[in-house]
Length: 235
Image (cartoon, rainbow, N blue to C red; front, top):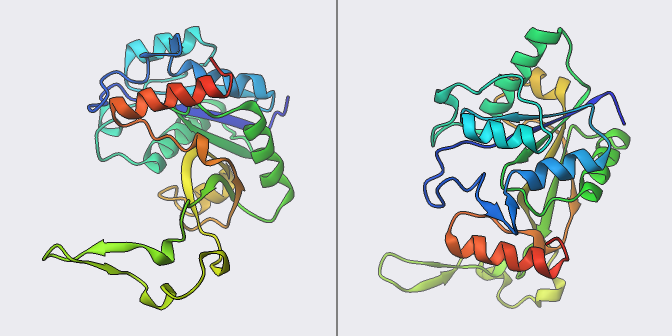
């Protein structure tokens, strides 16, 4: 187990579209247990902590093996708080209590149910061996975004980049999107840039199957995520 890596799992109690989703049973286990268990089983973290403002989520996370060194302030658990805001608070609190911070940090969301120990180990390996400050998980768009359409105000549609209409799709370079599955980053680089965004950091990415690209915001998302988990033998 490395002594230079920290995992921060983020979960708040005020989710609205799927109430209490972070502790709702997912394939028979509390949702937050999935990312916590993946982090612990990866064997690369010296500590796995939960950042939450919610006492019930904290109790469930602790029972799943995460540490709860502090509760997050309520003002960092509203609809406008960013991932960077929460990470900066957690890192500042940890530095105040211990005087030091790990070289690497990994951010997981409480709903990152489809993250695996293998993904986490690969992310750390890439961050520590390549000249980058952030490693994220991405998936390829199913269709070239250069051929995308938009609606006009009058209801008609138009190609955003009409110059690509006559180009064969196989001749267009693939594009990828961020999955929000995990973010490995250099603690020093994140704080050096002010701790307000990942945007200034030099980035690399791990391409993962589109099947793990499930953002759980609705009941339909939840049902689909459980189908995916079952198809992969996770539950």
